[in-house]
Image (tube, rainbow, N blue to C red):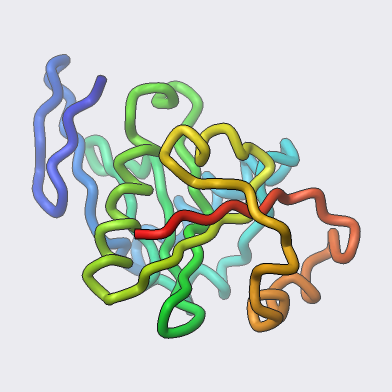
Length: 167
C-alpha cells in the first residue's frame, strides 16, 4: 500500500514521491485525460476541460513525481448535501489505497464544512460500499442534482447507481 501525506510530499516504501493535494489549474489537462480515459471505457462519465476549470476548487489530486495518478471531487449541492464525483486512479496504481484516500479527503472536507450527507453516482458501487456508502433510491436525491444529469448524453438512460453516506 502506498503511503500518502495530505497536502505535503511523502515518500513511499519504494522511494516514490506521492502527494495528495488540492488541484491546481495546471493539473486540469492531465485530470481531463485521466477521467476521460475511464469514460471511454464506460466506467464513469466524461468531464470537459471547461467543466474541470470551472470546478477546480472541488478537486483533489494524487501526484507522483509531478504526474497526476488520481483525482476526486467534492461538489456541494446544498447546506446538508454534497457529491463525490470523478474518482479516477490510473490502472497501475489501483488497489493500493489511493482512491480510498481521495474519497477520505472528500469526506473530511465535507465534515469540516458541516455537510452531513454525501452521495455518489457510480457504475462501480462496490468500491463505495466498501467505504460505508449505502445504495439509495434515486428519488431520495433532490431534483437539484439532476440539473447536471439532463445535460448528459446518457440522459435519461443512465445506469449510474446512487449511493449515500452520512457523516
